[in-house]
Amino acid sequence: MQASRARLFKEYKEVQREKSADPDIQLICDDSNIFKWTAVIKGPSETPFEGGVFQLAFSIPEQYPLLPPQVRFITKIFHPNVHFKTGEICLDILKNAWSPAWTLQSVCRAIIALMAHPEADSPLNCDSGNLLRSGDIR
Image (cartoon, rainbow, N blue to C red):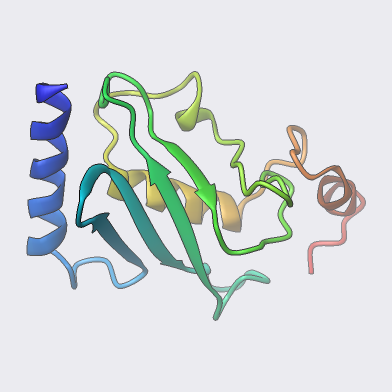
């Protein structure tokens, strides 16, 4: 657990130092628990999410960075790879393709990329996946 705290403190310092480096992502650490974070991300341009602001909840395991964080959308979103009730995200790097090289910031970037390029073949929201497969992208 000590290693995970050290890693999270390092990420926290990086986020504070580079706040303006990525204007599409704002990461916020819970004041009382380093293992709880929220993120505010902007919807990617040229997508139905453009202009939107989306909140994510991060729950970080004590084995981080060896295990991935649990991330879910707090903001409701209609997307093939997001469960419409729980906000759970189907993204390989949050499951079997996780690497300790990923950071919370890079996870946010990957989620923004997923918003722009949904994967209809592994939907958590079947209705949205069916619309996408039938060519209805707007």
